[in-house]
Length: 356
Ligand code: AMP
Ligand code: MG
Image 1 (tube, rainbow, N blue to C red):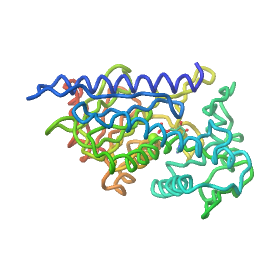
Image 2 (image 1 turned 120 degrees about the vertical axis):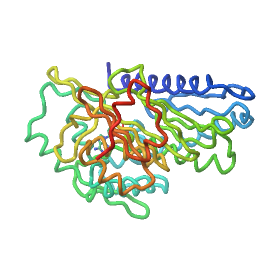
Image 3 (image 1 turned 180 degrees about the horizontal axis):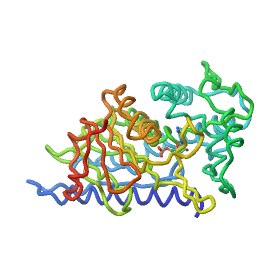
């Protein structure tokens, strides 16, 4: 299966999970039954977007759907690496300087900020390594890349070699490329949220490729909830997470995208320290006040692993995380803020540990 079809399949799985979760919330007893939520789903950014609007507040649903479509299409046309004429594709192709619009500049500045605040665990300049390991849609390499190949690719990485000024962006090393796959979906969630919610403050969830941002409540006195996927068993959840209005959740998992090289399986997140796919982590889920923060932190904490994630997470006092290492038996590490809103499935309650 191609990387893209895999992305679509995993998008579908996430959607099914989201739907299962909504069914789950609907099964709970209600004083006065709500009409079912109104939902629109469509393909975008190599995955799927869904808007879910609470049934009793669904009057502007068509409008919200159309606005979301328009916002995502606008972001895609400026920033998608799948669109050869986007600003990011032109930057990647030519090295710049290329003219960039305000939204693209905002995204590049945000990406740099999160790179700095995660000590480089999140790094959008790793594209040459992502390409080397076969994650950019190209064929996976026939053999495992050698240290020499990794070190050549690493010379083309580094956020300090991406220069962004008021109207242009350029690379300081010829041959550099960037990949916004670890932040674009979260950024897009925030653009939708910040544009639509002030005008239509209805109870709803934006979902882009499994990353979500919620507004309001699922019902009176009942927050929106999502299932946190079990990283080892694809149709199971570890538990459900209550989400306060305005918060975002993103998940990174080693099951989402991977390549096989000589029978060895490698997951799609690259460690900037080694230039190799991260080993030892199965999944991270991050609850944050913005989509961009949850998206970048889910990737960064995946890179940092159980031992180092806590120290970086402390720099983000409003973000909370769950981490599962890739080993048996199952262990679920949670920060205190995540534990508060998390109800594990009964069989996993004893598997919960505090994040060191
Ligand atoms: P996510 O699924 O949100 O964790 O994002 C993973 C995607 O981000 C990958 O598919 C790559 O496109 C890109 N990526 C991989 N490793 C990193 C990294 N260390 N920092 C930033 N982006 C990364
Ligand atoms: Mg992410």
